[in-house]
Image 1 (spheres, rainbow, N blue to C red):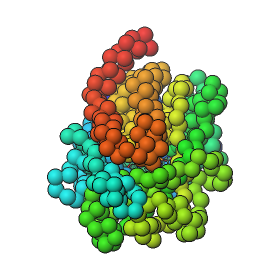
Image 2: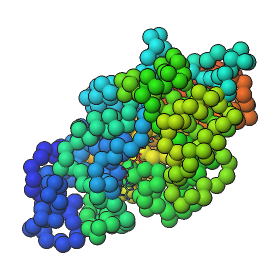
Image 3: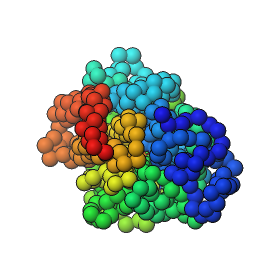
Image 4: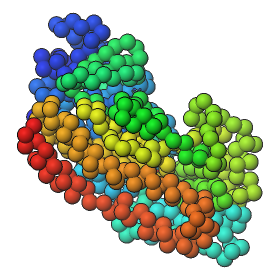
Length: 462
Ligand SMILES: Cc1cc2nc3c(=O)[nH]c(=O)nc-3n(C[C@H](O)[C@H](O)[C@H](O)COP(=O)(O)OP(=O)(O)OC[C@H]3O[C@@H](n4cnc5c(N)ncnc54)[C@H](O)[C@@H]3O)c2cc1C
């Protein structure tokens, strides 16, 4: 229905839906594009601008390709990002990948790693006290949590992003395009970039991350207090260690995913890169405002070590030798009253930025991409786009916002600060064995069926 082939000339319709306004020369529109951006010919009745090439925007782009939905992906950075270390993908999100495009899941499996010990395929992590001796003095062995429906898989973000980007035609991506403003017209949206260029699309999807600007245009008028992300009172140090080095320090504890729980601190650690690296996210809880002007803060090694000294086993302190002493503040969107505003919609962290404790944030972005691309694939007229966003909001928002909420609580559990469990590891393990099931077992097929029924009903007159 919508073109996905790669010719290099604007059709009249595409010109209408996706055109620059900087120079505005209708007959020579191809001239304004950078030499690498060559828009395709299209008879599409609408064109989507996806803002942001993170996991959310990229999986949406792959979904749009699969559903034959015309789009251009705009990214502020000059190239695809490879920032970050490990990312764990739950079975729900692996299913979503498969449903978006089976190739996507297969590529992920090529890259991902599980626990290295045979028989621990279904273990998400082993809960242990972080304290000196890892709980031995209390006679408390590691408490595994997971489920039959769960399979441990994690990848290096760089490898995952490389796979995702390899599936997206280069001519549908524009780099160094930082959105600074958007204006909704009755039948389209004008996007203004920092470099002065403007383009027009039929609708805009903001996959621009937890700090992204599109949220302001969706929520700013009716819910101004919900625009800015909230600091969670937690920051992390994130780093990787060659697995042999981790094994030298931790012995065979480094073979599998661990959740070291301490008083106000927590270290989540697991193998990535086909078992050659050990990924660590070391969380510090400090219930005081984040006053640094940036979201990351370089500190001294001594300051970093002081965050954990006396609270964790010396072996974990030794692991910090591999960490860059940079604090990454954790912000989330604990409340998002609505994900869309007419022709603008949020997706991924811009809608539901979350803490990392359930390893589910990227997975929620992938589920978003599945539902969004499926509904967009049904749209036949520009007017139906708002209906598509309404359906996306009603299916995705309750679930994704629940993930944000429960992830914050999970962080309390991991740092032994949850009022119900405190430092009772046995009760914590029982809770952890149950608390992720609703995320992992979710019926995405049913979501798609609901979307179909809603689309039929809501477009009967549109
Ligand atoms: C320490 C840590 C560990 C995590 N671990 C896991 C895990 O194990 N499993 C999991 O599922 N999730 C995990 N997450 C969450 C996960 O990383 C995020 O949910 C996910 O990466 C968000 O993807 P996104 O595409 O929505 O946003 P982002 O990755 O933030 O991408 C947004 C993109 O938009 C671009 N952009 C921003 N502003 C503009 C603009 N004005 N104009 C144009 N482009 C713009 C940015 O440059 C960026 O490329 C973790 C998070 C953290 C912090």
